[in-house]
Length: 377
Image 1: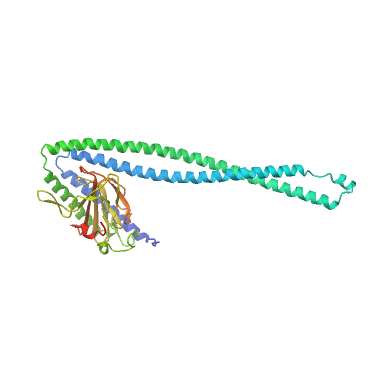
Image 2: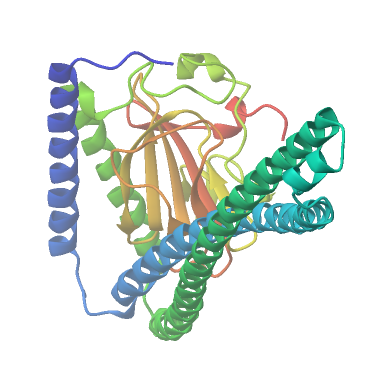
């Protein structure tokens, strides 16, 4: 387990993270203010796809709470069944004790002495009765304790069942919300298609989108260089794979792609009229988990034109990984993640017609071929 960081270091990191978040928000506002035709349908995607991301994240949280409650209810059920079996057994034993006690009723000592009965036999009968009485008293006390525990378990079970029912009701409401947002998104996409068919040049959009992402990456790199505490530091979080504390540069040839799917192109992919993508697009099923390729810290988690719900992870040493077109972002800026940890879900946000993940690797702000760093494909 890692040792606790000194309070001064923790405070510095919090200040650095606040500075990073503030700069990202300022940059997002600045980029938005420079966009032309802000009333066009593409901008309506932001609200719809952000709502889908938030609803899906809330749904994932509710589902986790539901699983925990179901596990707790199962344990309570097992304990209740065990207690009920024990109560039945004790009832039988107590009945036998009471029958034995009634049969061996207390002898008339005076009558037995006058009749010449052996005093030792009288003493044995009295002692036997005493043992029966004590055993019956203990059984009754144990029965009372078990009945009280069973009643408490019944109350706990009822309370947790009510809580689970409320969670399931919220889950149904959240599912309906996600479905409604997806219907709204489809309507927006139809308007986008109309605008594109009306003559908007896709080449200009692509170039603008790529320049926008490159500028955000450069700005993040600049902030990380000036505020190191905002980025990922060795030892911030134990890596799940391949080993804790391994520098990102040493992972070349050992990374896994963030999602299983079909590669739509290779780096640098020819897109149209000379435009080249700086990453890969991996076709995958909507809702599939998107996993961090290495341990790091989330330095961007927001919607961006052309890339939809976008996540950027800093891995230290000026290495960044970029995950775009997600349906939902499950991590916030400032959170640390392990290698292989789910950070988003596959979608088609940002105007994509097919679901998948846009994936980049960058060093010092410059994109490089991710496939050269991937092991088994």
